Image (cartoon, rainbow, N blue to C red; front, side, top):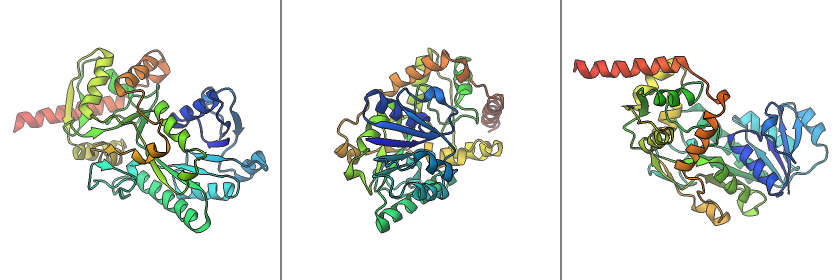
Length: 340
């Protein structure tokens, strides 16, 4: 199999590329700007180019035909329109990474299947993904363009700690607050269900769809099987750090209103995603990929991630603006309690 990745060095795609190269399953090609060469494994072929420079890309790939083209950085309709121009007739399968956040919020049922309606009034990112899916499926229905849609949920790797509420610079400031014994904000009452998936498990499901004719014209969600409450997620992180969690529960609606003034994006990230209980039914995926299962549960995955982050100072990016905002919000809540 000859596979071309558009991107290939992100949280999700890097695990897939590593697994393909390690197992010698495919001849792997990557199109990206080459800024993350340390994440490109030995054996992968790099085409250093901006995917939007269509002429340069066409010159680079020449007359190559790819069994599978894997799109990981397509966020808006012009991105997939470009891919259609580039790869129509040049690939046997085009796999588009959408998002599980595209599912209807709130859904009529907390159990999510690929048949759950797509609609998200809270998040433009999700609506753009829905529009990309619609464009691609129209090309499949009318012209036979060989598309497969993949909808990941919250996927993480050794460099990332899954959280519900964090600032623009990522997760580290929350970890630092935990270490210092400060209160940590959790959206809602902490009891809503969520699914986090380690990227190596995701890779198993994704690779099982590559080159699979039964996947053409279909959508699949790829997530782990483990459902945790947000309190369980944060307590598991605290356990791995060896500290006691000092939680402060605040409504997602309130956080969205006071957080978006600072550009934290909580309306989309919380109201449009992480504050809603979801359990994913992966039976459709497993009917094609029986090997798909959770091999790295969260209590193991978070220790893998923390071991890496704590030993790599470059991952410890402080965010004083978010830290100050947390203190202000928590203090305001405490004042409100005392004044009532």
